[in-house]
Amino acid sequence: MRQSRRSLLGSVCALLAAGFLPVRRAESAYPQASVHMSRSCGCCGEWVKHMRANGFEVQAQYVDDVVPVKRRLGVPEALWSCHTGLVGGYAIEGHVPAADIRRLLRERPQATGLAVPGMPAGAPGMEQGAAQPYSTIVFDAQGSRVFARH
Image (cartoon, rainbow, N blue to C red; front, side):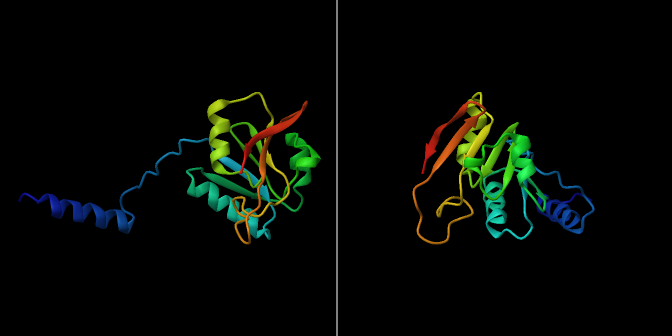
């Protein structure tokens, strides 16, 4: 007996919903991001949501003290924020917009990473309250410069 296309599609959907057929997740076009953060930091969690909404697969690493990670990745103390990540070999410090990270990965400058120092209102994960202008900084062992203005 020949099954109609609609009936076949319905059967496949039912099998997927029941967990009988494997669902293959689409692979991200970007390298996996890992972020070291405190479990109790709400704005860090909001930044992770921002990254995921922008196509990044993010692995959260909950730590009691992020300072050793910042030092290991070479983030200058003047640029520190509340969480520190690693994407495509670059350190990502604080509330850096996903668009800036995509640009970093596209351009591949000789740099240690990007940072949004402090916790500026209006940055991803810090959307509550009136937004303030802020800059994303690109840095390496020799210094830093503005990468993008927001």
